[in-house]
Length: 449
Ligand code: GLU
Image (cartoon, rainbow, N blue to C red; front, side, top):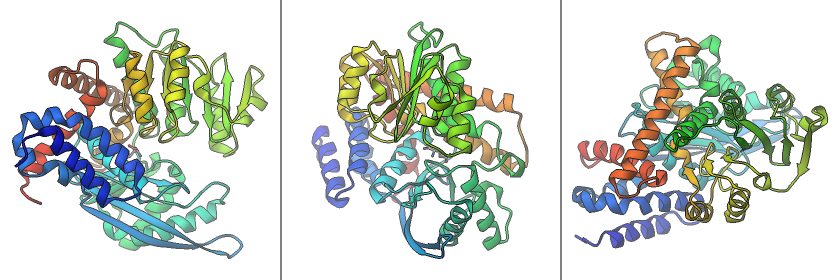
């Protein structure tokens, strides 16, 4: 057996490249984790012997299926559906569904891989998976979205179950889609299996705070990071990219904690509002009207819309990228540093490119990776499963308190693990190592499966 640890890690990475050609986002996610694991392999020879890392890099099951549906004019469309059941060492596969034209197998695998470690970090009994489709819900009627969801679930249902695989939302999949998916699952199986999906409506099995959880959680994580530096959100200028579910509730919590979010964005551009983003207007434009973010500036006199351009040029103390993968590159990182930004907290999954992470680190900017900072969403999904299993309902206050405790716990674990492995303050290493150790121990205990 090879005892040269860096060489072992490199070989594992080369194998991943060879076996998963063209899946660049998946390669990126694996590389980042592997870079943190040399310190672990040096202490745990058994994980080399049993090829534990190699097994964790290989999904347990990958399902790809055809999703035919008809639009309102009767035209037939064929989309592709995916569910990657990545790892079930800690519990049923758990992770969202993304409906977006950019979805392909590589994207789903990167998200599933991240989800494995994220879910482990929550300390809840959930494995990792991810799914979705290249279906674009933008501009589609409710009836079209419903027909698509029904067709999608007509195949997916056979792979799901509250003890097997439990999807939720992600980009393009919110309360409306979860409703249609749940309805079709219930119809096909003739079972009211509440715990088979999370992110359900509050009136039919959903949990308080699930909607807010990812954004709130990112803000709680940021607050914990600031607290170890004797700092807080009080008086801080904050930019939050995106204007979807994560961004909206990150903004809300930052405001509640005394910070001011001066900018947010969508794929068409960003708005700057020095008075602080007005959430009621933002929700009306993005959630109710499903319109472009320029609609915000049309309504709020203190705001201006910048078409195209980079939101990271807007000066801030704290940046919370909450739109999508690789949205913050090295140039954006340099712009943030030039304007005095001190904290970057990932609300989205892998929004910061590896080069940008390097630039931020070298400049001493405190950086929180998404698999730790955005884990509040899936953690609250696990709380939803817990309530479904016990046929119970918790109050908003109790649920929010649980979420805050979980996020503080994740931060503490990442922080302490980084110190223990000789990289104080490095939350990327802390998150990767702590998440990996949790999964690897269970994988190892289960034997060669
Ligand atoms: N899609 C979310 C994430 O990236 C939530 C997944 C879930 O609740 O299962 O973690």
